[in-house]
View: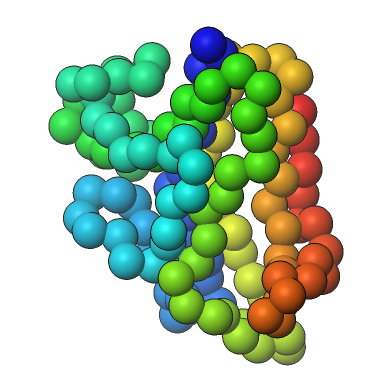
Length: 124
């Protein structure tokens, strides 16, 4: 089984106002984890022994550990977001993978049909 690890500290800012802020140190109600995503800490490493926010073993992070051949699992916001289009928007996260060929994408979608608006970034 391949191990994919994603340290996800996802913060979205609109000017000085935080729309979403999830460091996983407290209950995070902004996001829903689907598929093989889970939250752990440095005492139960997957394989990193600390998180990026606190840089200690007690720090928490999200990791992705799928079975062989699975893909396409998501982390979504719990509520619909409608950020202003006339202000800058900042997306920040930390990512780590032991796999060289692991595609990771952040996409903006809209509507009940979850129509893709654009891919904000994608990398392997």
